[in-house]
Image (cartoon, rainbow, N blue to C red; front, top):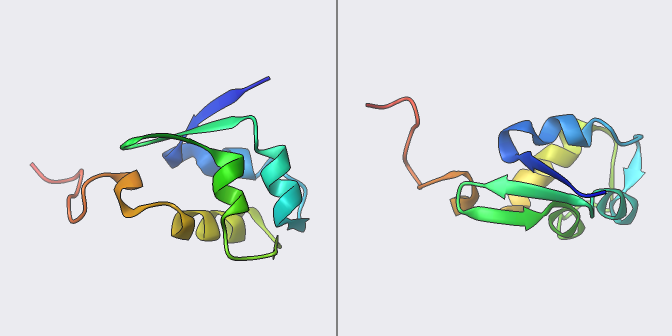
Length: 85
């Protein structure tokens, strides 16, 4: 069953994993999740497989690495704040 989540809610999906978890297992478990970004969508498992850590001790650690693996445009236009205007 495939799932979809927004980047702003990805922590809820990551919290479903059992930690600690190795990168390959996390990528496999998240391969059915489509992550909606500001500029499109990506497969969450594929992005997790591209992170720099071999394993994760917590959802927070995985989310941090995930944010570093995403392109800058994933969260919107650079230097723009949703709070302005």
